[in-house]
Amino acid sequence: MNAIPEKRKVTISEATITKYKNYHLWMLIPFVISILGFSYSYYFNLADATFHQHVHGVSATLWYILVIFQPYLIIRKQNIQKHIILGTIGILLAGIVAGSAFSIIPKNIDNVKDLKPDGFFNPTFAYFAALIDLLLVAGFILSVCFAIINIKKKNISSHVQWLMASVFFILSPALLRMIGIGAIFLNKGNMEAITMVKMAIPTMIVMIIFIVIFYFKYGSFKHPSFKLLLLCHIPFLFVEQIGSNEFIRNLTTAIFKV
Image (cartoon, rainbow, N blue to C red; front, side, top):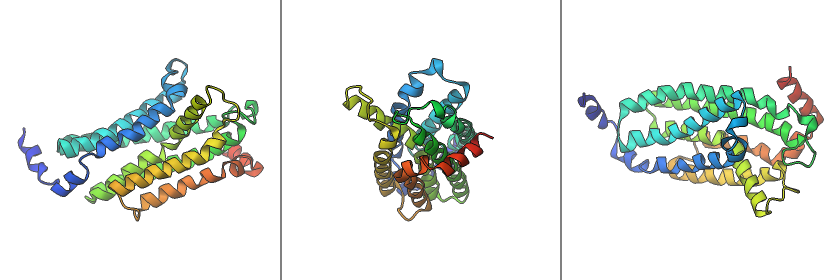
């Protein structure tokens, strides 16, 4: 029973083990951001969450746990068999994350007419969120697909980078909320003048800093996943222009409210 795992251990090079030795610990950072960001809107409010929110919340949480445990399993434990099994489960899990996200995106503009123009979550950000979430979930799906393709080609470095990208594609909603919660805390609970629109650029800056640090340690700035991540976060510079544009609002309504 132990012979197969022992044989497979030799396929993991010492260079790979050394490079990714602490990778799983670094992946705790986006996980913690996700928990903190959605603490008030989901984790501390489970009783009032909808079925769709539970499906997305649980699946996304499990995805983050998986991308922490998988590198630990393959690098520290060198258990390739279990890594492959969990990887197969991860494909199904990624599908649930994406599918549940697509079902929640239209809810950004469900009650848009009742939102205050200067509120924390206002109409401008609601329309922007619907579009940017669509773009980021598409990036998530693409990154998972390329991660699968690259591991079949035994390109471990590219496999890791695409999976790393999958985490950052779905992290900005949590990061934005975490920064917003921090701003409210620093303002002693006063939410006046604190909006998601104003939090967008700081979120983009922090996100890019994280992306650059992670790719400096575990990837390459020349890798397509790095370039795609930067490209997909550029819209955060134009939240007001995008979210307040009447044509975009009508188009968004047509797409999500058919």
